[in-house]
Length: 161
Figure 1: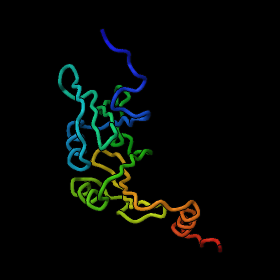
Figure 2 (figure 1 turned 90 degrees about the vertical axis):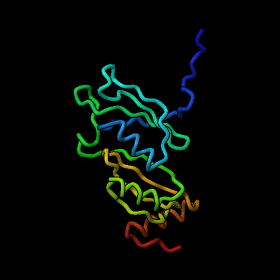
Figure 3 (figure 1 turned 180 degrees about the vertical axis):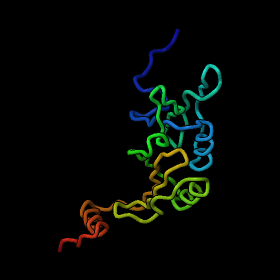
Figure 4 (figure 1 turned 45 degrees about the horizontal axis):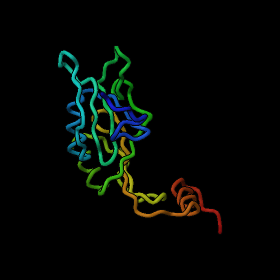
């Protein structure tokens, strides 16, 4: 007899990214190498020609993946010419992760820098077209400090105190 299901399966969070990639096995290998991902599940198509569904874990978070299949509505950022979504990933060493990602084929978008909101942050687009914000939390500034930092970053002079 099966046990009653929870609304959220074990190992999942309330929101779980589900990305579409061209070549799921290559994407899994890339995410394992660069982000320390761990493969949790891989479901091949009945004929074995591609991976219909896969799941990886990075830290305490799971990401679902599906193979690019435009005829079924699964389109990757490579087909769409970009993405409006970015995955935000906290890592122990932003600079090393950024450099490793770029060396392994990612496009460097924003090199790592200390940001006004308290994180060291950089951004890449992986070889599969997905945008990743790479961050390490350094400090927790007050809202006032963040607003002043944002004004300075955007080129506006801070208001006098």
